[in-house]
Structures are given as structure tokens and as C-alpha cells.
Amino acid sequence: MAIVMAGMGVLLSKSTSIVLDKANERLQTRWHIGRFGYGKWEELPPVDYISVFKAQKTYSINFDTRAPVRYEVNIWLRKGGRKRVYFSYDDDVALNMGIEIANFLKVDLWDATDPYNKTKIPFTGQQ
Image 1 (cartoon, rainbow, N blue to C red):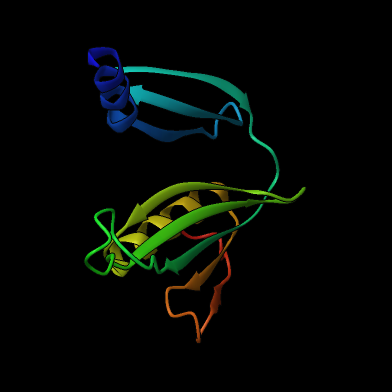
Image 2 (image 1 turned 180 degrees about the vertical axis):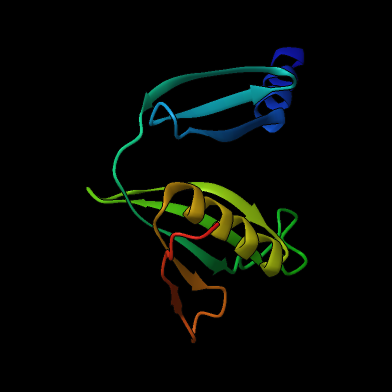
């Protein structure tokens, strides 16, 4: 039983982060358990655009209350696929993070925080 509980503790304490290194054009996906982390660098694939969207979950973990609305920031790759790099429960915070990442990578941003009013924010070259 102790081994099962320890395994569940490790799974619940695991987190993931994305590190971007623009100077060397590489990306690292890191997995953390507590303060210990592991990740390997890979070449940054060509990025098409950044998106910020509203991800409505139906129920929370305990299934008796509505889950909070979550806003996700994703990197969309030219060859298909995406990587979620950030999420927040505040739309302004997520949108500001999306703008920062889009400016950092010099790509356009799609604002879909309101799913019925999607807006493209083109990269202008200013930071």
C-alpha cells in the first residue's frame, strides 16, 4: 500500500514547463518532481503563430462543482501540432503572456479568449 501511495504522490506532484532559448533556436520541455527536473533540448521547429484561448472544463476534479474557466497559451507549429506553454485562470494575464511570447518569437497572435470573437494581432516588430 505504501508503494502505491508513494507512486500516487509522485504523479500528483509532477509538473511540466517549457523553456525557450531564442539565441540558440531551441526548446526544452522539462518535467519536475519537487525541485528535481529533467528535460532535453531540441531544435525549435518553425512556429506559425501563438494562440490564447478559453478552455472550458466541464467539472472539477471532485465532480461536484463546476471547474473554473482556464485560458491556455499555445505555440502552433508550421508542420502541424501545438505545444501548450502556459495557462492561467485570468484572461488578461494569459493574453499578456501570449503577447510576450509572440513578440519574443516574432510571430502573430490569435486572441480567442472570447470564442465568438476571435482576433488576430499581427506582429509589428515592436516589443
